[in-house]
Amino acid sequence: MIARGVAYGLTAFLLGALFGPLREVVLAPRFGPALAVAIELPVVLAACWWLAGSLAAPLLGPRPRIGMGLVGLAMLVALDLALALALRGWRVADWLAHFGTARGALTLLGYGAFASFPLMRR
Image (cartoon, rainbow, N blue to C red; front, side, top):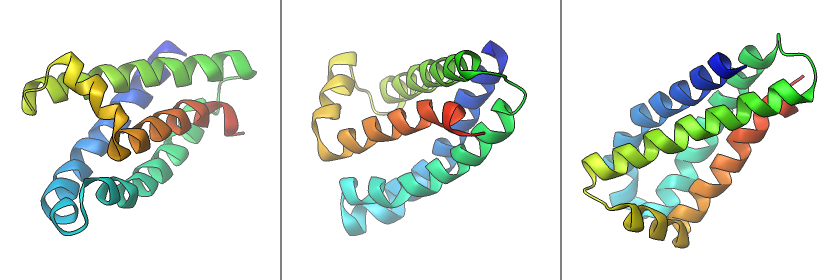
């Protein structure tokens, strides 16, 4: 369960790393940061939905699936924070404050959906 959660979070982060530059360079200048995230988020979540199904399939019962989702979320959030600190030059307080924006609220919704997918996939 832990290894599957780590794989789930790491793969989701890598998907975001692939789509992030496209969002920032192409979508955000044209549509604004919040709408750019709103456009990107369903694509990333669809991939995570599929990924959760394939990784959670061998896990029986809700507890290991919840655990996989929570481990994946912890991994994803830790990597997102590290990226914000390293590339954006943010402090932890800046990263936390961004969740008060429309873009940050969409990110929180995405985190919630992501964490729940292993439990929802049967």
